[in-house]
Picture (cartoon, one colour):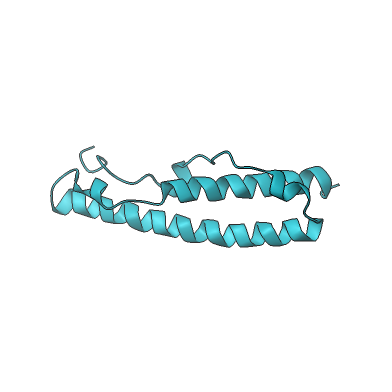
Length: 99
């Protein structure tokens, strides 16, 4: 339990953020597919960054002083926003193009 103190959240445990969906409403179905692919790549990268931050936090908390891992920073906001954009794109595609 002490090791978890001050650790970055695992990417899978981060909830999607609410995002503005208006930019997706005027996109073509092909544009939405491309946007989904690009945002998927972005989500993979920020999730990787978040996993690295979490691993560093755990290591610092176990090896140095419990709680020092909280000082390393993380990408939680970026992961949440990327997840929100992925969901928004998927929802828009499903609403207009997935028939």
